[in-house]
Image (cartoon, rainbow, N blue to C red; front, side, top):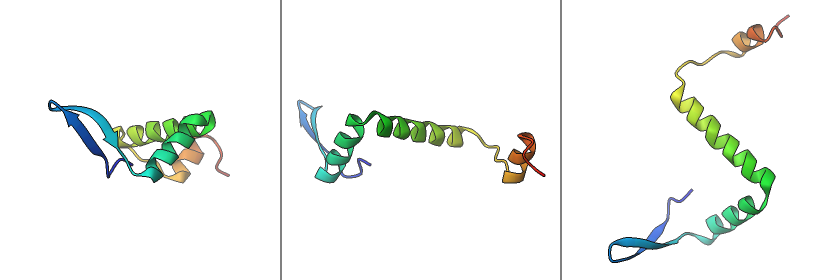
Length: 70
């Protein structure tokens, strides 16, 4: 998202951002739907956690930790 943003500056200060209409419509829809916005914020949080956490568990390890394995 925001790969094709153009900034309009005035006195070397960004005043406006121009984005493709598809991105604008996507953002408008997401921001007007609380569930979609919550899902997107959850996604961003998961991406940050993945980036900050070096440990990865296998599915079997998770099942065992949750006592779900047979």
